[in-house]
Length: 63
Image 1 (tube, rainbow, N blue to C red):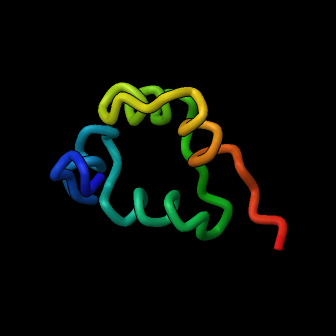
Image 2: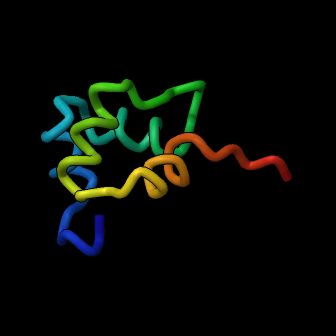
C-alpha cells in the first residue's frame, strides 16, 4: 500500500467495505478473511505477482 501512496481508507473504498472491516481482514480478527473478489481487486490495484499473492493471502504463520 505504501509503495502506491495508498491507505486503509482508499483501499477500503476500492473494495466497497469500511476501513474497520478492512483492518479486521488484514489482521484476521474474528475470522475475517478477504473474498476472492477483493483479492482480485487488490491484485490488479497493486499489480501483484502470483508469488506475492500466495505470500500475502495464502501463507499461514505456523509458529
